[in-house]
Length: 453
Image (cartoon, rainbow, N blue to C red; front, side):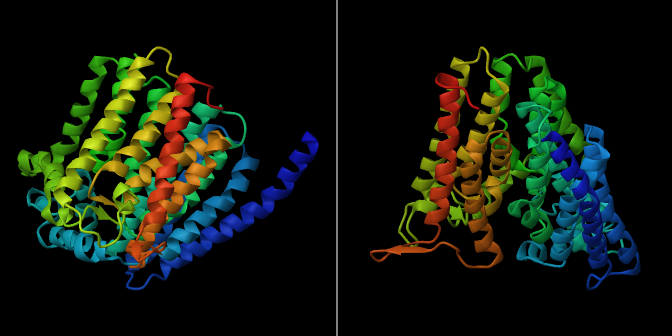
């Protein structure tokens, strides 16, 4: 039997490699022919995209996979490049109204010298990228997207690392996780289509969690700080380090790595004259932005998607209730983990992190379509470790895609009307609730009942 499997693998090696290289070549050709491209762009963009694909192969090779396996993996890698290349020209309102204008501000005001100005509502590490782009005679849009595509690969590699830690280095689960994450619709659409950078903080969170599970606490906190410096949404996973601390995997002295690295990320901007108050207040400004408080929900499959469309709701009371529920959910989860702190397994900690990244945005108000990105990715990792989680991962992915559809297509995908009452995203909200419930139930089963397999 094993001889037959080996022969089949040999038979697949050459066609997979050829087809993968062909897809990568077509992706490079697409970059070469992008509308509005410059001469430098026609050279740089194809090479940059192929370099991202080469990085994926190098990371897999360094992980220990042999040449035949790498040749087969050229097919999903080539397909991932192909899909992203054909989405590169798509321009969304987020790019037109915000990112493009921020790059133009840097271009007109001295590049990095303009970092001192109050431009954009992202923290400074992402603004460094936009300032750098402003110097290049290449269209802004594909450069912004290529940065996210680079982290798509690092995200998939982080999923592979976590799967190897949870399921063991042997078997196909880590490679399945790598390929699924690389081709996951929300991951493909987020960066290559939308031009968002959720893959950046998510990749850093995955590697932070991987380092924590292999008992490298300082590295884990440094990566978590970098994730937080890019995106506030990394805060959904941050409470897990409380459990890592009181379970003895992280020492109190290690916790100071987090503010230290976060401060280091600010140093270039401070040296260029940006007031420290502007940097430290960026996330408070985001949270307090009145434009973000017009509605309780922004196409997110949160608890507020369960409210009928057009229903008169006291927004202030609803927001306070949601914040309280998110706080109580986090507190209750940490209390349970504290009660069972002796002997917490890698799987139990990972389940708790997944529950936090699903539960906190589910209850909070003012959530956007993309805020379940990290939780959805963690569920994919769990489904590769144990098939029992596949339905929950599929439910979370469908729920998030409903929100993506609402933004990208400007219409809701699962509108439901019953007895004259309409819900714009009831299906998405129920799917996410099912994914969250399944995760929490599995966590409690592992803590107080049967072990998770």
